[in-house]
Image (tube, rainbow, N blue to C red; front, side, top):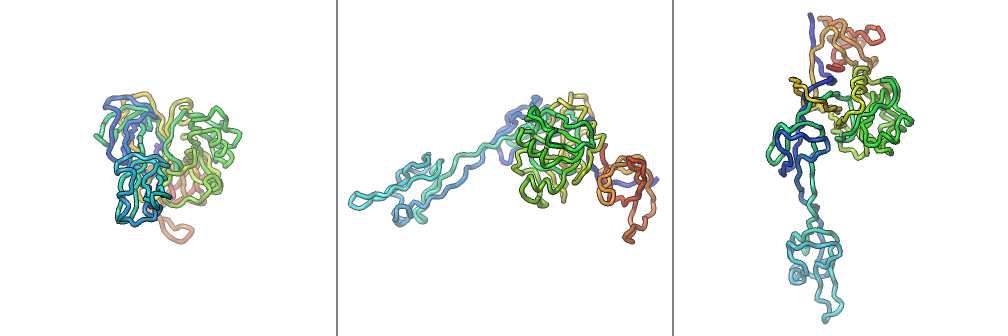
Length: 375
């Protein structure tokens, strides 16, 4: 029997999920192996060097740089506040002295008698890494971070914006085919991970942001709505660092697309539980998918997953999603895998497969135009 392999989104009712939580630079780890942590727990922390603030003191005092050092009122290494006197000119006959004041708070790091500049180093910037998912610490990487393990229901999305967040899972609407509208968002959803069915509208996103929803998940989004909410067009870089005030994740694609029923039912079955969401997406080399992780009670699951792209076997009965026009976004199962290439409408030849769509229709599409819709 003919077979093929294709990438796809991972959607599973239970898997062992590993979260690798690392600091950007060396720091300290605050938890131990075997410790149970909540999603919002700080597991590691460090401090980055503060911002640098140069001050042209010689220019302020109207002196040559070489004359600056004897005029300094503060010594290198001293802490200064905004408005503190750093240096003072001799004036004329002891009168009309000029004072150079600090425009920043921090540490006087250096004074140069060649440039006449003083450098104020701002306070160190704390960096904390949180657990992201509730689970058990199974490994500590000294000075860097930890690996956390949890049994979880897991689903990947097609696209997202905004970074990591977590909260109680709540459902907006009754069906996977129902659009997410402004009236679906309620004040009680503050801090929650809200799951809708089909396209999330710009009005719903704005209302969710006003209410304080942590993340909004649905089947699709219109690119015009996304641009309207963001205020600019997204480029091709990795998403996840947007300062939107909410994380957005779509499971199927752009446009009026309903969430896959199996995905909606999986999320719906866990309503009320704590979930973690990351909207970071990269669709070029080194594919990175946005994800939803719902921590479950341990069961000894043997499958281990750490996120990222998946690849799987295409066989008769495999559930797939068509990812290019004219059937973009439709779901179905593989009903036939012809071994010989077929001539497409464009006149080119390609390996194809037959898909039985959810409405009973059967269509022929290139194998490159599909991906696995769940496992």
